[in-house]
Amino acid sequence: MTGPDPLPGGHNGPPSELDKLRRRVAALSAKRVEAEDKVDALLAALLALDDLLADTRRRAGALHEARSARETASAALALCDQIEGAHLMLRAEFARHDVDPMDAVGRAADPAEMRVVGTEPHPSLPGGTVLREKVTGFRRGSAVLRAAQVVVAVPGPAPEPVPVSVLDPVREPDPAPGPPSGPVRAQPRRTTRAQRQLLRKPSAGRARRSRRA
Image (cartoon, rainbow, N blue to C red; front, side, top):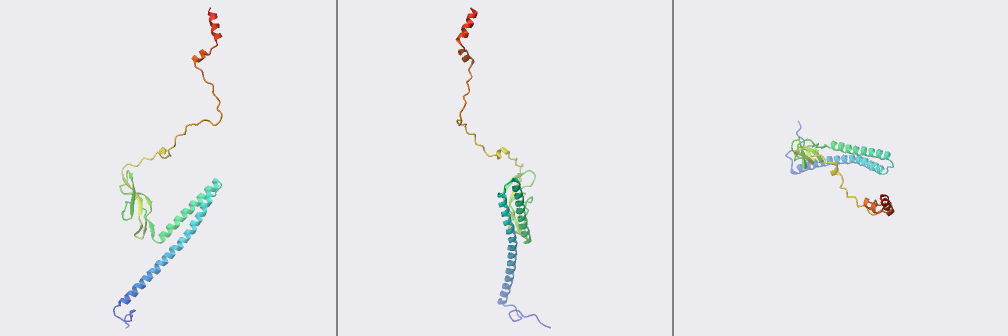
C-alpha cells in the first residue's frame, strides 16, 4: 500500500512557507496567462471591427463625392448599413465577453447602477421610472462596468409640445429700403378739386357769364 505523494519540499509533513509561496506564484501565473489569452482574443476581434470602420470611412467619402441625388441616396444607405453592422459587431463581441447593456428604460432608477442626470413630468408613470438613457450602462456579469446616465419621470402633466414658431430662429427685421439703384420714372401728381378750379381757363368763366347775361 503506497502512501501519499511527497510534497514539493521533499517531505511528507506540512508544506513549508516556501512551498506555499510557490503554489501562489503558480496560481497567479495561470491567471495571468488566462487574462492575456482573453486580451489577445478581444484585440483580434477589434481588428475586424477596425476593418469595418475603415470601409465605413471610405463610404463616407463616397457620400461627399456624390454628384447626383441618386448617388447621394445610394451612398447614404450604404453608410447607414455599415454603421449598423459595426454596432452589431461590437455588441456581439461585448456579449461574448459577458458584457451586456443594462436596458434601463421602464425600470425604477437604481442608484447602484444608474446616475440620474435629468427629470421630466409624466402623467401616469411612477416617479423615478427611467424614461430614457443619455448614456447606456453596461454590466460585466453581475458587476457594473459603467453606470447608466438616465432621465427619470416625476409626477405631473406631460410637457406641452413646443410650437414650431418657437423653434424657428428669430428673424431680423427687414432693412429699410434704400434709394433705388436704377433710374426712377416720375409719376404725375394727382390734383385736388380746389386745384382743378384754380387751373381752369379764364375764358371758360367769361363764356358762362356771357350766356347768363
